[in-house]
Image 1: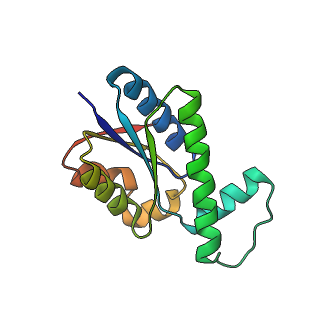
Image 2: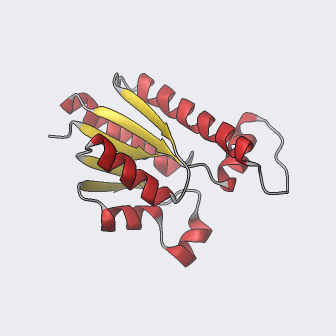
Length: 147
């Protein structure tokens, strides 16, 4: 049923819960799991705080955001591996997070997109709408939002 599952990761607990749900489904259906992360300034702060790196008050450089993004994806791979998922691909993207998740889903032919219901962009979602809402509204495949 679900041969290819895309998971939007941002390092938040809900996105990691989304990954765990994807792994449960992935084991059942022998699915490929695609982890998508689009680094944003919030990622640097959260990854820095959880890994012991100092964070700066100024806006992070793109290189810092990419490094933090790679750490989010590496953590996602570790979670997936611990859950028994064998087919995992990572995608570090740039641009609008929802659009990048949708592009990845289209490019890989996803049957399902799973996102965390509320991630790191809670303040921005008050103005722009949440990533999960945009993904579920525009996706051409099934979507699941996980708390």
